[in-house]
Image (tube, rainbow, N blue to C red; front, side, top):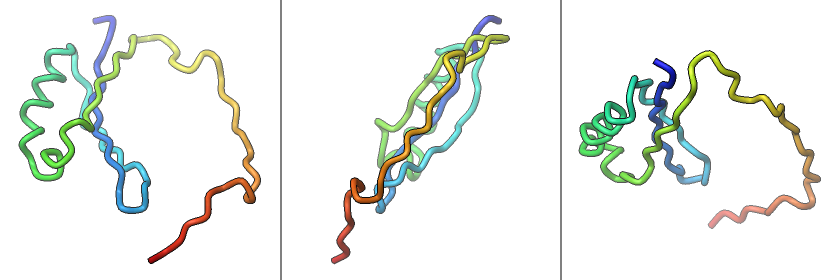
Length: 84
């Protein structure tokens, strides 16, 4: 096996935050797609069927070779929220 397939489901909650569900790791894309077929009828998932994603990961390889940068955003540039 040289790759695994990670299945997740993402939806936005009422406050526009992402609600991520880690579903599982599968040995083939077909197995992950089969899980989507089963779960897409279940409560919660059925309301947001487009929220599923499958990502392929190579086994025994680094996924973040480039590193990352954290950006600081001044508070004055953040959008303000109004509550009704």
